[in-house]
Length: 122
Image 1 (tube, rainbow, N blue to C red):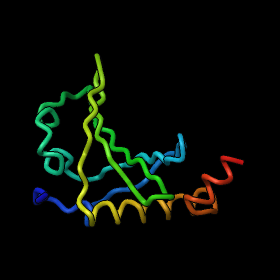
Image 2 (image 1 turned 30 degrees about the horizontal axis):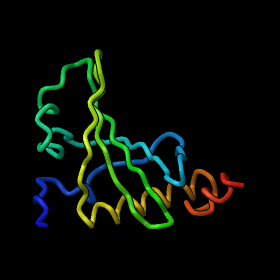
Image 3 (image 1 turned 135 degrees about the vertical axis):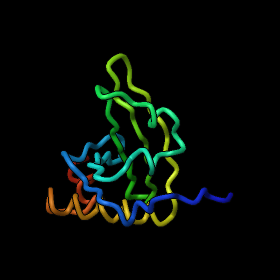
């Protein structure tokens, strides 16, 4: 399967983990601050180009450190309803975001993601 070439490379953009990491069923949910042109990066999602001033975009990843799989989603948060989209990551983006989540976990909790899950499961 061939991946679409991105106009922007996530690995070179201003993105930061924020808030606490949430854990559900051995999966770590991370929230991100995106300090770049989200309409350009998420250009494949038509609705992003038409968001109003009272709507915003949230970006999340879901990471399972046991199988080293990470998935992402974009949510357009609206006044009436939220719209969620699965977001396909390139291999480089997935590797980059896994590293970011691992580093954020270490800085926030003093342990890596596996250790965090194990301490939560005790």
